[in-house]
Image (cartoon, rainbow, N blue to C red):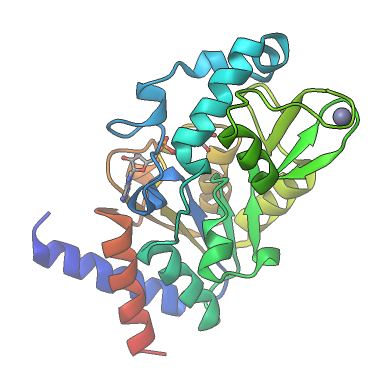
Length: 259
Ligand code: APR
Ligand code: ZN
């Protein structure tokens, strides 16, 4: 794509955002790679180094070895690093500030939209959030800070202090149901939006990847900002192949000029 093409697409995307009244932004791991968190299916992503089949809820419950691996993945996935929101997150926070955002639907568990300044009640985390860890036996909840201390002290598989039960991050594992009320809200927003903006997702994991389909069925326009193909590319009104931080900050700069 030449710079002119990119410039024209960025201008067109800004126009669509300005004209929209119910904008939903949908994000995936690709929005956080510029903050240092690896994605899953991009080059060097988590599932290019670990086997996703190892990380079903069934295996997590059945084997201490899988629990050890899962905690290792979470540490590699940025659990310890003090990750900061990047320009893409900040651009989306600015869309809310200027009154152009209905909600964010995210597959990410990294809390970066909250850290960027978006209101928590406008963020629907389909796959949960890494900030809490809960005991599967007695429901005791622990902060991720508490768990980090345990892991840093050399404990590889933290267990509940109260009952020695299995501790599980408050995130959705393969084979687990998504939180119903979050999924229902995200579905409703997708079905009623007039513009659906995808940033940094391969759009292959269901039911999250149904959201753009709901939006298109409702007559919404679809913008995709991603490096690499997605199954929705042919349905996108604007398809921008580019780095989320760069593209999103340029789009919001154009929006800001006209608000
Ligand atoms: N800018 C734009 N796109 C990017 C960037 C970037 N800086 N970095 C990576 N990408 C793209 C990748 O090329 C890839 O197409 O973002 C996409 C991320 O796709 P995935 O890694 O599949 O992440 P995601 O779509 O969020 O995965 C969904 O799968 O494993 C589960 O629970 C996990 O929530 C995750 C779900
Ligand atoms: Zn317990």
